[in-house]
Amino acid sequence: MLLIADSGSTKTDWRLVAADGTVTACQTEGINPYYQTVDQIRTMLSAQLAPQLPVDAVQRVFFYGAGCSGPSVNHVVVAAVQAVLPHAESIIVDSDMLGAARAASGHSSGIVCILGTGANACCYDGTQITRGIQSLGFWLGDEGSGGYLGKTLVRSVFQKTLPADLIDLFQQRYNLDRATLLDKAYKKPNPNRYFAAFTPFLSDHSDHPAVRTLVTDAFQLFLQTYIIPFPESAEWPVHFVGSIAHYFADPLRTAVEQAGLIMGCTLKAPIDKLVQYHQTTN
Image 1 (spheres, helix red, strand yellow):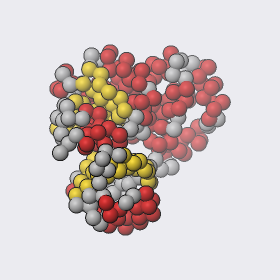
Image 2: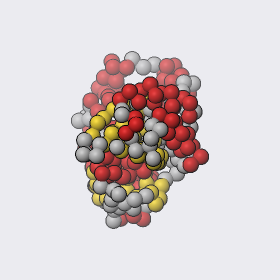
Image 3: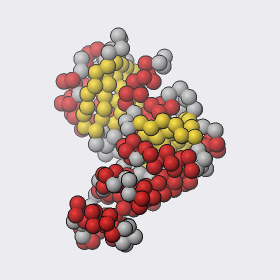
Image 4: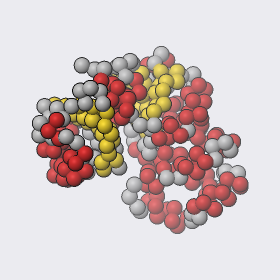
């Protein structure tokens, strides 16, 4: 049996693929080897994953995850998975960016972007990543991400650059004051997640011209900063993976077309396409 995982820091989606092609879905907490030890991951998998699987039947594992940037950290995941699935003959751990690329572009070349809480992008030749971007994180980058959109929205509310009707609707919903905002932004952990939590407001009011402009401008900035500098962008389609790409597909397509790029596919999550990729890969 084949086991495939797509993991973020919050949750991990797993798919068990039987010899006859039957696919079983399950989910556990997220895994990130930068922040978790082998024992912590093993304990969680023993409690959450093992009861959902025929552990002795799993022979191959492909794990794509946040924080899985190379052998120096990937071995943490390999050791934890091997402890829970002792009969697995092969455990391959790669980055969530490669997982997104294989899901969106399959066996074809393309530019693949992740637009979720954060943002990332790469050039992919149908097998491996050939070129990436220098991500600077939430405060210095992540243009086009959920964190960036939320930050831009909140800043526009407090600087009163949004129309008054939108500001009123925002405050009716969130009742946010300056002191709370600054505390969440500069003193509390995970400000990217805090600001990304405001994106449902943008989605709910996506027909408002000011919202559409805000979102489209953010996507245009992402494309100008990260995608257009790739020489491959003149010929390769640009694919998108992630919740922000999914829920804001229309303004995203507008931004891509305005930039003169080739629009590829949009996936909310990569896991099911990863199953297809590995079913057609020897």
